[in-house]
Image 1: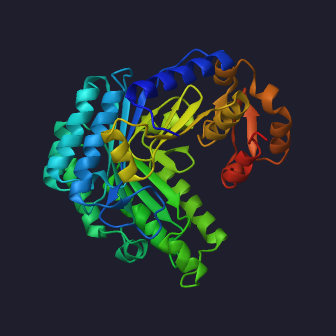
Image 2: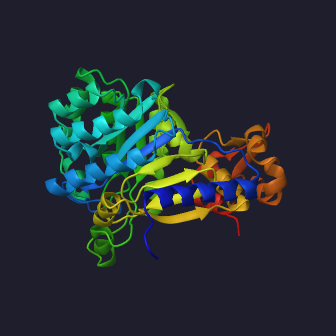
Length: 404
């Protein structure tokens, strides 16, 4: 199919929106969240299946130019209250490149209107000067990909930083005035013991971040980690030990003042991630960059994943959207419940009715009845949410709400 120019692209997109709004009779709701993808890393981690590549300075410069052009194509039609720059490793950019990126963002979106502005960072690439730039350009939340404070675990995962690097960078951010810092941690690594995991949690608590994300190690696609598993170089940790580690995180972090507000996320009061709430509530957002996804009023879109094709498309004013789908209403309803169940508070009938004109019971009565009898969900006071028992088999519970 012949690629369309920028004007045709805008016309086609608007036509799809009109068609979608007509079909669903829904009021068009503008997105308030912006995600910017930086697909560059110093090296690929052993477990990583994200859209990222080892960086080359000239490619990064061309990519940042393409990003700036894509932001310009939005033509200031949206005002974002949350911005999230992720990757990849945004902190890998040189100081000049980082400032160029931050200038592009502030040119498009007045940061006085942005309530939460997050940048992901790797402790091995974040310097004092980069921290100064982030602060200067009004970034107010940092998400540190620490994963572990123990060098043995970091080496296994293929990380480029040490445990000391992680602690030092956290201190650097605090001294620069950052008051909203997230720490990512991974559990369930082969040969990782419950004591290893408890030690990571203890160090994290001692640093006193506002937010902690804990993720079970997953074996994705054709990553080096998955190949080692298939070739029996490593052995996967047994499910019982992994579950006990998850329970330890919930108990220990809750005891230390962190609210377990989402399956993998814990926060001090008032520091829940606003940007991610947009995803969990299945509301509209815009993504820019290679492979970035957007979701606007039930229409799902994604950009060209290949970095070089994305750069070329933006340079030539050609279409960079590789996928568009008007999500059928039944699928949208189903996805909304599934995403909401990730939140410990679940979803209320009031919220559901305002969005879809029916109750959760009307849509999923039989499913809810079965899951309640099994003790996996509660549906009290018109709120549907996972029970503690359901939390530990969340994927299985959510699968029951998939539209077929």
